[in-house]
Amino acid sequence: MLTKEQQRELADLCGPNVAFDVSMARFCTLRAGGRATALAGVQDLQQLSALLDYCRLESLPWRCIGRGANILVREEGFAGILIRLRGEFTAITAEASAGIVIAGGGCLLAELLAHCRHAGLSGLEFLAGIPGSVGGAVGMNAGAFGHCLTESLQRLTVVIDDGSVRTMTQGEWTGDYRSFTVDGLDMEKTVIAQAEFRLVWSTPEQVGARAKEFLKLRRTKQPSSMPSAGSFFKNPVGDFAGRLIEDAGLKGERIGGAMVSPEHANFIVNAGDATATDIVRLMRLVQGKVRSTTGIFLEPEVHII
Ligand SMILES: Cc1cc2nc3c(=O)[nH]c(=O)nc-3n(C[C@H](O)[C@H](O)[C@H](O)COP(=O)(O)OP(=O)(O)OC[C@H]3O[C@@H](n4cnc5c(N)ncnc54)[C@H](O)[C@@H]3O)c2cc1C
Image (cartoon, rainbow, N blue to C red; front, side, top):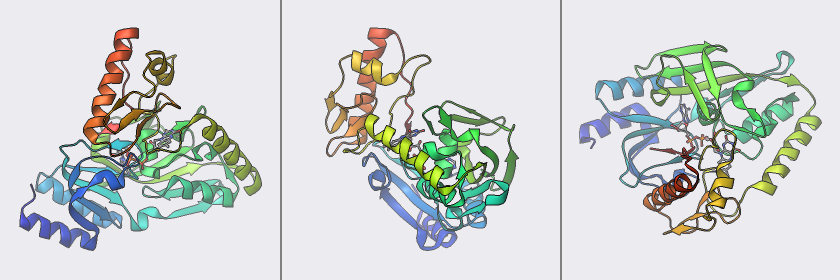
C-alpha cells in the first residue's frame, strides 16, 4: 500500500533502518504473525518526530512496538508502519545519589534491571525475567508478584502523533492492572520515548539477590520451553484466567501449531509453525468455552494488531 515515492521518502527519513513487507514472526516472542508494510527503526527524538509528522501528512497508519513480547500481528498483516526505538532510545543513565534511573523507551528491561543493580537502586527487581522494552512495559504497566511499573515511575517523555514532544509527571497518568492511560491521549498514537524511575537506595548485592528470588519464583510458575507472549489473558477480578481455562479442560488444547500450554493454562504457546490465525482461533475457542462454563469473558492481555 505504499507508493514507490513513499518508500523513497521513508528511506530518506529513516536511512537504512527501514524495511518493507516484513514478516513480523521474527520480531515477536510468539514467533508467529503476519507481515508489516514497513518496519522502521528510529534513532533519536528528531527522527521520530519527523516520521510521525510524515505519517500524519500522508495519512499512513503507524504503531510503535517494543520487543514484541506482548503482541501478535494478525495474519492479514499490519497495513502501515511499525516503529521500533533504537539508537539514543536505548540509553540508560542513573543518578544514584538522587535515587533516579532514566531509561529510553527502547531499552531492554533486563538492561534496566542490570543498571539498577549496578547502581544499588531497588524497586524494579520484580521485572527479572520479563522480556520486553521500557516503552512497551510502561504502556502495558507491566508487573508481577504484586508490583507494577507505575509504582516507581515519576516522569515520562512522550511523542504524540503530530510529532510534538511532551513531558509528564506523576498524577498525569493512571496505571491499573496491565493498563496505562493518560486523559486526552490515545496511547496507540503515543510513543513512550523515555521514562524516569524513582527508586530506593540499597546495595548491588541486595538488589541482585531480590531479583534472583523473583526469577526463581517465575521459573517455578511459567513454562519456558516454547515461544509465547507470557500470560495470554488478563486475570478477571478476584480470579485467575489460568484456573478458569484449566477447569474448562483446555490444557493441551491445540489448533494447528497453537497450543494451550500443558504447564500453565494461561499461556498460549507456539508448539511448531503456528500461524497468527491458529493463535487467534485458539484464543476464541478458549474465550467461548470459559464463557459458556462460567459466564466470564476473558480479555486478552496480548495486543492483537
Ligand atoms: C515469557 C514471558 C513472560 C512474561 N511475563 C510477564 C509478566 O510477568 N508481567 C507482565 O506484565 N508481562 C509479562 N510478559 C509480557 C511482556 O513481556 C510485557 O508486556 C512487556 O512489557 C512487553 O514489552 P515489549 O517491549 O515487548 O512490548 P510489545 O509487545 O512490543 O508491545 C506491547 C504494547 O505496547 C505498545 N508499545 C511498545 N513500545 C511502545 C512505546 N515505546 N511507546 C508506546 N507504546 C509502545 C505496543 O504498541 C503494544 O500495544 C511476558 C512475556 C513473555 C514472553
